[in-house]
Length: 464
Image (cartoon, rainbow, N blue to C red; front, side, top):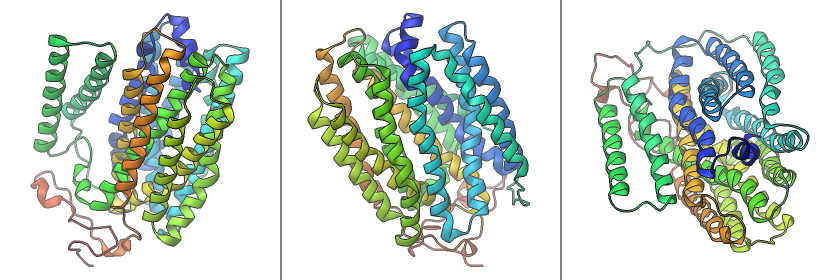
């Protein structure tokens, strides 16, 4: 809904496209940084408790966002909303991991992805109706009844005693550097868009490199880094997480691009954008359960590869047919292919990432993987802001929209390559001994061994 409202918000507050994009970028940066924290809090404090407080905070900030007196306040409240939502995603996925039989985990996560896609499919349509009859401010209170129902359902959930790792301190310095890194990357893309040259651009590159170097250094020396980076030593986790990042980059770029293209280039209403995005999200919802079932039967790798291939075909078709008078039917067909591919592959890849880690670290694994998903979204939003001109509209923008389409097609193609590193079937969880995390020990000794959880015999494993 918020993606559809960006043009209206831009006009109400008198902003450029680049400025209004911070409503999305700020939300995604907060989501990305807070995902590992949310997963870790669920692992250590209890997932049901953390989930409940996340829902309550999300409700409060949703209502407050509707009353924002200025764009700056709206961005701050959206960031707070993002932090609340970041607690929910990895905690919920971790509860699925610990409460679902391994042979049904793909189906369970596929069904969850389908429900999320249904919400994404109906969101643009509801948003278009809201914009047709009222202000964009009416969108935010719509989450209130949904959160209240979720809180009631949570009371019926009885979570068994969970195995919890020892509590570890939070690396606030590392998190601050992560925020700074994502922010300077977003600013750098904006500087490229504005055509900065010479000393100003060089200074920005130096600042980006400095912040990036400081973040990498902090993660190496910290006993408790921002995310569970040690999980990336596992081939399947790395491949699945890269897949999630790249496919989400492609999907989110499409999600943000279509409303601007429909309105600024074709001069059509938000209802057209909503119907097109609903077609993409609706097909995601239909195919996600099938992707989960296929992954349980055939393994995680093949459905993920098939999904990436369909997304690549849809993205290149969109690139080939993108012109000022392209028909909504053609756009719907291209977006439909992207939606089918996303629905088919994301569930298996997300399942592979979560089940590659020990069960006690399910929340941390889900948070780290989901963090990379939002990093992909940030890159997608940055690409869009970086290539769209600041003020021009009309046919002159066709070339820049084609650049965006080429970027999302390339991301989908690389995701196909990443899928080749995903395991087919998981290692039985009883065959894994969870390495102890002792703050006093060397972090290398607590790292998972190469190949653990990949289910194909790579690497040495410890047996019970």
